[in-house]
Image (tube, rainbow, N blue to C red; front, side, top):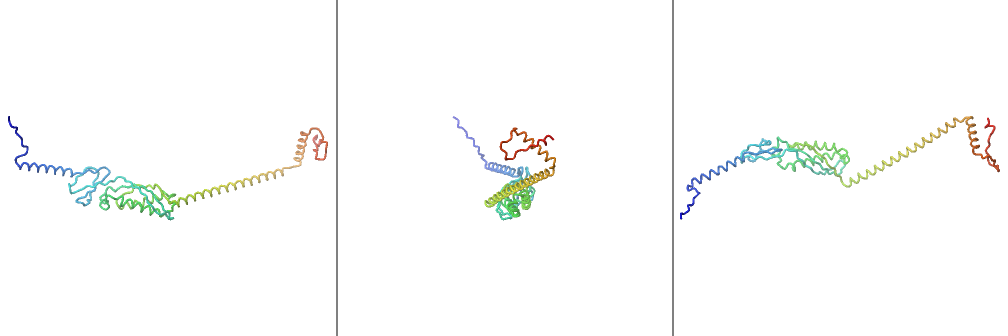
Length: 280
């Protein structure tokens, strides 16, 4: 039988092995450099460039960009509209405790996000936005009474927006809109408001009742005046001929009711019929 020959795959020359190792390492480094030489900034973001930890003036727009491998780093920062909703407690002009729920829409200034990152970092909501909302609400709330905060809600919202916009602009952010969704007052104040409304309703009812009584009284006075005027006119129109006519009408009415018999007992008033007068 022939002995099987085992093929040795390992190069017998150590120099060739070293060359293969070096070549593979170089290929790996090249691939690594290629992959680390490009970065993609997603839509709605900007890229902050840092070089060995130092923030650069250049800001990358959306898309594919070249960077120096292992030296430069790209930090993405969202420039879309962001929302921050919070509850803030403040005191009104009449020293009522007011808890305000407000929703704020804002966005980062795309051209200078590098400055925001350099001065504040990524936690700008906690460090800047939330405190600025609280300060703005307290400053504006103190200018109005609790009742005015409700009746002048739009005016209050406008002032808060103006104040907050200035504070955010200091840190390279732009305010889009704010919405005050709710005002909450203490239980004592709510009870006082309820009692005030009840009192106003009762006062209104009393006023309406008084007006109704006054109107009815005036109507009665006018009615009495009209009746008196009517009687006055009737008296002015009474003449001798009218009196005679009324007598004749009364006698005619008596004739219609008479049954032709004279009463057996006389002592009361018996209707007198003037026949001659009738003939005339």
